Image (cartoon, rainbow, N blue to C red; front, top):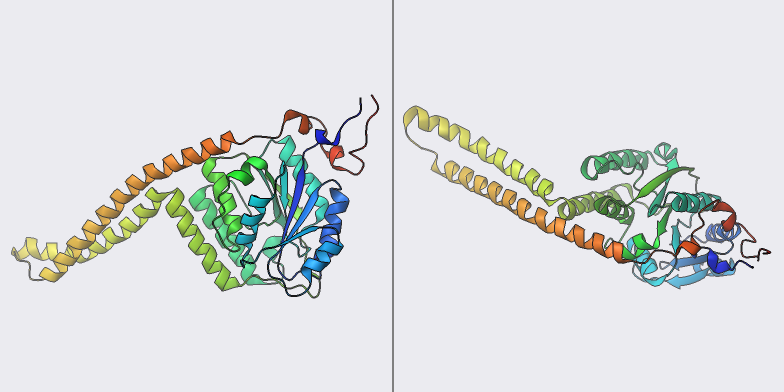
Length: 335
């Protein structure tokens, strides 16, 4: 009997763009050649250089997102688009569309919810040493705080299952969105995988939108907020420890004087040290309580994730998924 195209997973390619007219056409064409049956969506984030027109001419479905920032675009994409498998990439041509097939194959064969295309040689940077240093620093900080699941948390080339996309809250507004994705996976202990891929250089006329210090500060702030939300006991215990150390620093000379003379001549210092110690205990107690709340929230998120429908078994090839992604996969097979 003939095999229907519905026997294959529905794939959506998501390309958030801001002033990428120089590259978006070739990127869309590359994905159309690699995944001919995939729907390609370009979300234009207030570009002024004709990005939307170039994307439409290349055959993509184009939507405009007026809220500035990659996080706003990704949140809109995840809410709007229905598919079994999602691939997200940048429109600047630094990620090879030909690698999308391998990302999908890994997602299917490993039954993962997210596959991250880690960037080979990214620490040599795509032009700026500040970015390379920031990559190393933030990846180390991530592994210290949230666990060793990822080695390149800022990669913009990823494949997702429907379960991941529809359970991901996406509260970030800017480039911190990749960090939030990684923390979401680590928090719910979702099956994830990494795939090392080549990382290209921007062609002439295309410029990075990243600011080393401004965006670095935003990402650092996001780390703090995500730690507060997902690991409140560690977060508040660390702050509590700082207040306790300050309290002991002020308190020690007053206690020494008291045990030597029986007098407390520096009463304001004693009152300050006592207040700091009380604050430390209050912060520690808040951490204990909020840790229980965070665990309950994580359980609810996990239950919601488990309630989402997965692609039917008929749509997921059990063997050799790669040929199903090539051109001509929709042709009927003779019985």
